Structures are given as structure tokens and as C-alpha cells.
Length: 475
Image (cartoon, rainbow, N blue to C red; front, side, top):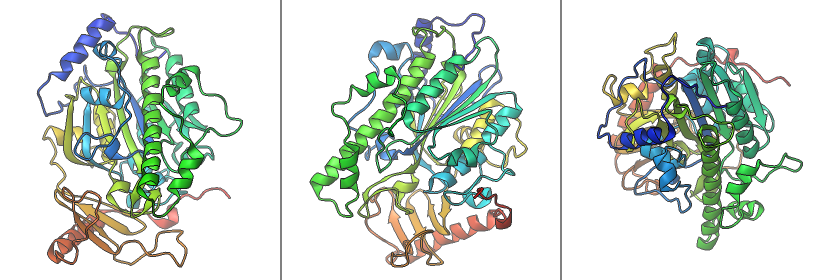
């Protein structure tokens, strides 16, 4: 069965659908503080590698030709789980940023609630130190059942983030992740009233685009059926060959972007199918419960891929806007008025405090970082600026400007000696130049110095994790 448990007087599916539709009509821009009778009992966290904000967040820069969208009847019953369907009942954040463009540091900040310099996980291949208490550990201490299903063929994410999870499955591909997550959801005892935390991590639409590895278990029938709806199959090998070209002509670029968009659709369709199968009262083995209304859902992208910014398609090291701006969607209509896009500046590290408040967890660091909910309803001040770092290259943005600053003139970790250093200093206007094609650092030195001062203030406020205490992988 699924995450939910049947309460006395549970709504029938049509009444549940009506209540969800009513949520769409709430004309409020505030998130009420969760109350004991309304706060979610369960949490599903879905992270997707390579997912760009401009494919998810509504706005002038959104480009998503292929979308998963349920029909009207399904949506009225509250069973539409495509990104647009979820956004209609949830909140999408237009200005959410990962703490690092690298995968492991971004995930480490999300799970620990601390930026990479403080968490001790600054580069891919490093481990989250046991001193950092993760969301899973807080949930486990509160009696939750905790499980993670991640695309992790080499077991690196399990080694880095396994603490706090009662079950942690490293899977070969996204299809296996979704199949095992569905099995776990359905196997849960709906009458036990045990709360649950589920983390799903998908490899997503990252370049090189992934094909099912040889010898891998076949995808479940429900996923194959959804996959067959694509107008064309993705030729991953050809798309990767085109994407590897440093400078793409318009036709080549269009082919790569189309392959990327199909990969995004496949992720969206797979997640939608998982949630539909787990929470649909009309499916076999499922009960007409209030499981979905009692579950908080968080979906975010990490390590977004580049699509020819600076001539690169893929996950090259960079502090450009594309590599840091992450799609973020929160869904729980009882505590979060839905159907809107928020311009609140959010660091993905804020999600730990958000989950703590949402779920009513005990946290030894309670109050040290404001949750997104507290910032939305005015109980905590909104961020006026946001900074992040990777390999001692810094990025900072406020409401109008964004600066990339490399004060030590460092090369990216692992770069060959002949390759150029990371950008030394680059300033651009966010609204008029979202892809940072024009550098204003020389024209506006006062603004550059002001943002540099913010970086210094942020850097001085951090308690850098001691390098000698960082855990190392076994040889």
C-alpha cells in the first residue's frame, strides 16, 4: 500500500477531488503555519539531476514543448501528477538556487541544511560527515519509516548519504528507481499509522543522455506504456555525439534541445505514473484513503545541465545561472495555498528547515535557518540576497544583479593545466540578460564591489568544516 493511513470518516475520491479543486480557488499568497491536525504526516522528496528551471518554472523563459498533463476528469479527482498539475495545487519557486553546481555538494546542502563550506561536502566524490544531521536522521528519530531509491550505479550516493535511511537502494537506472519506490509505497501497512519519508533521486535528462544498461531488468509495464506515448524515441548515442560539439550550428542545437526535452518529459511522466499508481484509489491494491492529502511533496532539480551556454551542452564546471538556478515545487494544499509562482529567493539548503517545520520534527538546530514556510508568511525575513560557492569560486545575486567572482583566480578542480581558469569576475542584470551574455563588471564597478562585500560577509559568517575531519572513501 502507499504512504497513507485511512482515518475515520475518510473522504470518498470524488469528495477528495472537490476539496482539491477548492484549494485552487484560495486567493492567498501566504502559507499558514502548519497546525497539528493539518500538518502532513509523510514526506516524498524527489530530486532530479540535470533538470533546468526554464523547463519547469512558468514565466517568460519557459521552454517545454512536451508536457505530461492529465485529462479534466483525472484532475478533478486530484489524480493529475504532472509538473503543471502539481503546480496548480502547489507553489513553484522562480528563484530557487542550489548551493553548488556539483551534484554531491548540492545534495549535501539539501539534506544537511548547511552550505558546502559548512557541511564538509564540497566536491563530488566526498562524503557527508556524520556530524551533519540529515533530514532522514531527524525523521528516523521521530519514528518515521525512511527509504531512499536513487539512480546510483556505482553506489557513491549511498556511501555519501546513507545515514538515517532504514533502506537505501542504489539502482542502475531511473526505471528501476521508480519501480522499487512504487513497491515500497504499496508494501507499507496503511493501518500502522507509521509516518514515512521517501527520497527518490533520478538521473534525469543529464548529458550524456542515459540508455538502459545492458543486462538491466526491464522497465515495469506501466512505465513502458507511458514511454510508448512519446512521438519518437530518443537516440541517446546520436544526441550525445551532437552535444559533444563545442560550437553547435542551429540545426544541431535544435536536435540536442529536442532530445533534452524528450528526456524531461520521460522524467515527468515517470514521476506522474509513480504517484498515480501509489495514490490512485481506483488502482488494484490501493485504498480510497487520504494518503495524498496527508503527504508533503517536494520536487527539485540539482546540477542542472547546460544547453550551449558558453558553447557547452552538459554538466561542465561553471557558476553560470543555468548551473545554479534549480526548479523547485512544493505541494501540500492543507498548509500551502497553491496555484502560484513565488519570487522568493530560496537556497535548497532551506528545505531542511522547511521539512522540520512541516512535519513537526525535533531539531537541535531549530531556528538556526528560517524555513521557506516562515519566509512566505512573514514570520521570518525574506532573503534579500543569496550567495553560493564551488571550489572557492563565488556567486552572489540580489533582486537585480548577479556576480560571479573568482578572487583567487582558481582553476576548477580536476581541470587540465592548459584549460582556462574559471571566470574571474562577471556581472550581469538578471531580468534583461538571464543567460549572462553581457558582462557589466567594467561598466559598473561600484555594483561589483557591493556584491563582493556581500560575498565576504557571507563567507565570514560560515563555520567552515575542518578539512582534517572530513571522512574519506575506502580505497
